[in-house]
Length: 402
Image (tube, rainbow, N blue to C red; front, side, top):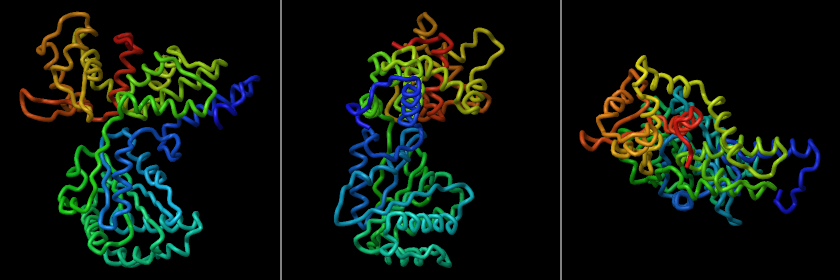
C-alpha cells in the first residue's frame, strides 16, 4: 500500500494492524520482494551478466549477515523480459549432503518451480535420474527449452563437507560451461575469499564470475529504512535513523532487526514518528531476543575475576574501531574509542594482552587475526557479534551513540 493510500490510524485496532505491518516490512529473513531491496546495483549487474552468458556461472561470497541470500533471491527479478522466462531454483546445502542428495534437491526444486510458474512443459527434466552423474545432469539441463533461463542457486555451499560433492559440482560447472548449456549455477557461501569455498577446485574459477559481498555503506543502510517508509504513514527522526545505521556496522540484518522493534514500539504507543527512545527499546529487545550463543560467547570473551581487567571495554572498543569493508581493523584504530570509553589516554600496551586473549580458545576466539607481526589486522570471527557487543556496551552505559 502506498503511503498516500494508507489511512491514518483511528482506533486501537487500526494502530495494532499498523504495528504488525511494520514487523512484516522489517522482517529479518531473506528479502524476496524486489521493491524492498536496497543497494548492490553493481553486484546485480554482474550476476545478470553471468546469467545471460552460457559459458559463465557465478560465486557469491562474503561475511555472515551481509545479505548474500537476499541478493541471490532478488537479482534475477531485476531482469524484465518478455522473450524468455526465468526459472530460479534455490536450495540450501547442509553438511550431510553428498553429490546425489544435493543435486536431487536441485532437480526437484527446479521441477516444482517450473510447475508453479506453469512452465512444466518447457522444463522437462527428470528428478529421479540414476546415477546422478555429471554427464547425466548436463543432459537433463539440455532438455530445457531455449526460451527458458534456468538459474540454480546453491545457498550455504560452505556447509558441504563431502569433498566428492564439491569436486563433482566443480566438474559439473566446467562441463556446463564447455558445452554452453543453457543453465546458470550460482554458489553462495560464507567465506573470506573464493579459495575458502572452492579449496582445491580453483581450476574452475575461470568459468566463474566472482562476487564478494562487502558490508553495506551508510547510504545503503539508510535506503533499507527509506524503502520501507514508502509503505508506511510513518517517519523517523534523523537521530534515530543515524543510531540504527551506526549500530548496525554495515550489516543489513541489524537494520531490519532494530527497525522492526523501533517502528513496532512507536506504533504500539500510537505514534507515527520513530524517535531515539524507540531505538533504545529496540536495542533492549534485540539483546534479549538474540541467540543464546551470542550471550554465551560474549560472557566467555569478557568475564574475569579481576575487576580492572577491562575485557568488556576493550571488546567494545574493537566493535567501535574504524574498519575496512570486510570488517578488519588495526590495533591503532582501537586507541581512540578505548580512550573515550575509559576517559583517559590509552597506549597500545594497555590492550595488547586483551587482543591476544580474544583470539585464543580460552576466550572463544571472539576475534580472528590476519597478517604478520606489526601489521596484524583483527575482525570479529562472527561478524554478527560486533553489533551485539556494541548494543551491550550502550545498554550497560559504557558508550553513547553520537
